[in-house]
Image 1 (cartoon, rainbow, N blue to C red):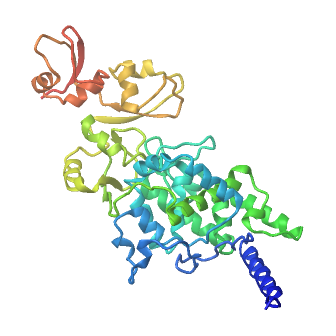
Image 2 (image 1 turned 120 degrees about the vertical axis):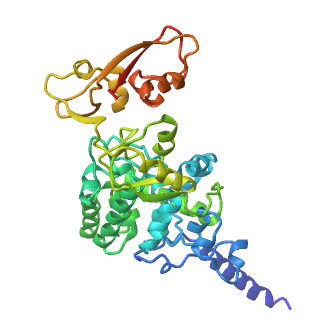
Amino acid sequence: MHFFRPFFLVLALFLNGCVSVSKQHVEPQEPAHTNPSVAKQQPSSPKPERTQTTPLQPHEYQDVWQRIRAQLAFAPSNHQAVQDRVDWYMSHPNYMDVISQRAAPFLHYVVKQVESRGLPIELALMPLIESDFDTSAYSHKHASGLWQLTPLIAKHYGVKISPWYDGRQDIVDATNAALDFLTYLHKRFDGNWYHAIAAYNTGEGRVAQAIKNNQRRGKSSDFFALSLPKQTRHYVPKLLAAAQLLREQEMVFPKITNRPAIAIRALQQGVILNTDKQWQALQTLNPGYTRFPALLDGPKHIVLPIEQAPQWQAYLAHLPAMPSSQWQQYTVQRGDSLSVIAKRHALSVAQLKTFNQLNSNHIRAGDTLLLPILADQQLDYTVRSGDSLWRIAKHFKVSISNIKKWNALSKDTLRVGDTLTLFLADR
């Protein structure tokens, strides 16, 4: 029976060759679809969630990250640049803790906007790549906000930027502009999402030229073959790596509850919030207003914590509209300085800086400052034993907030002998 041995040897070599072929690197084609359901994912190891006979609807997931995971559309990539970024994420296990904490108020909103447009859900991960979900992020190229919009792109898509408001840091205005821009780029690059995302980072002209150069030389025009700036060559792999970690559940993404965390409500007019405790709660959700507590010159909406939306709406409804008799906008003239302006309006330089959230004494002609209208009476009051901000405010019929602003106080504590400046109106 020894004559069977050569046959088995040949069969074993043949099967071994099949295994070797199956392990060869094959780079998937770049996604060219608009609807995330079009692309087919390669199967991975079975997960409990996938054993369900009826897939959950997006809103039925308990965690927003899992809602994203269930809709991932881009094919997995074995490219070394992607794997290098996967390794980086894995070596920084606390990174996603920070990301989830920052993203918690906004991720559900971003996901809903991406879904409503029928765009690949991977785009909801772009603020992670752009800004680490930091609403106040600012780059050396003057890009700002979660989506790192430049002034040129922002204004092209209708985002307002003024001395009082920067819509690039507003979740509503910035998300609309970013998704409008990405939709345009997707069409511009014939449905190739990798090219569109790269162009979002480095500009459409540079990506178009890189594609043209490769085509002229008979080379591949897929993203990984293009000659692009280093930052952009790493940009798409960062996004693909984050998606891979989420798809394969190789890294913990701390849970973000899959329900709205914010409410978008109409703001009929600009207002100035009148207590530090109250406006601080809104500042995180409305970073577009650059001169808190003044909500001036912004959009016709305000972002509120959803659990407290009714209370906030009632509070805002009772604030005086701007411009009001209490405030004015002043345009800095040539020769002005903070000390000159402060003296002219019966303020200290510290108070003027507090009103306008200024970090330095430098101002330029043409800048706009927020100033209180001159009061009917200015009073210097010396703090006595037993005094408190509440007692003084009640006696002179002014607010504690105003006393603190007039005197640039960061705390509620007073010392006997301190002098407070009060501005009183005739009654």
